[in-house]
Length: 384
Ligand SMILES: *Cc1c(COP(=O)(O)O)cnc(C)c1O
Image 1 (spheres, rainbow, N blue to C red):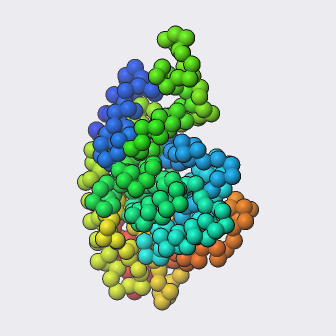
Image 2: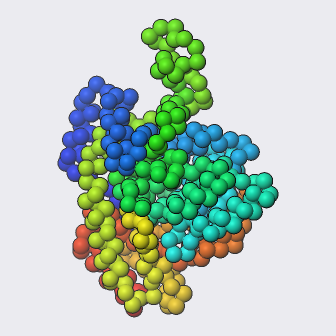
């Protein structure tokens, strides 16, 4: 089965990990800070705080922004559940903003309307989490402007989007957000097996993120609330977690990062070949906004209502032909956990319409021409 996404591992990656394995530090050594500095330089942010997953990164981002019981976080219903769950970990409430039908991202018009209503009702959110779906940036200029109007924090869920650009700058620069989160899961753009990172330009937030990543403990005398009793001294100042990335993972990440631009370029080449091959079929190929350059984590065409094959049948027939298609995502508000919190079908109609028609095709840097050709031939035969 050709997967929809997978990692690309070189002999250099293997050597980088082995070298750390033979060194003195498997965790809490010099490689994680180097990885943080390299991602920060690449993305154009001042600070990077590495953690063991993007899910953990979203959690500590919410903690750093002091999201808690009685507060609200709004995100997109078309995302992985982690973008919403981070609020629940903090005891906060979740709500969603419907998507833009073309970009699949949080719709700024829907956001504006919902904020106006929430301002009247006294139910404004404390944190907004736009998701850069498939690797294409959400409309951050408008989202930031609306957030500023109501004094709301913005966390970009850029799990799909490292290597992408928006307004001429790399995603992760935090030009329009307090914190940006990356994922290094193997299906994403670069991998550390499991892993994630929070980017920020705010030194105070960077300190809080570091605190929450590691038990809420600081060993920095300058940050202590009481005078250190000796060189052994540390303070637990918050209720933090062990969300640390290992040295082995950071070494893999540094090695992977060297090829990111080449990989994103290759993903664009694959997308362009799909776009060309599907012209004339009842498929809407992914819309690309001029203000953004996608990292193309996913390639998601929509099956048009005029097609004589429904999504479920297309899914089965492509899988039967060895094409490992997938569906990203089931709208989060339709999950049983969120239904129990009061969400219902038809709450976010554009997200639900998207879900009924979306199909993720194989998209990863090491996808072979032969495997893409087989995918294209199978799709064309199905929809012709
Ligand atoms: C993958 C993903 C996450 C979670 O990433 P992990 O590193 O697996 O925890 C969060 N949000 C989105 C949009 C994702 O695609």
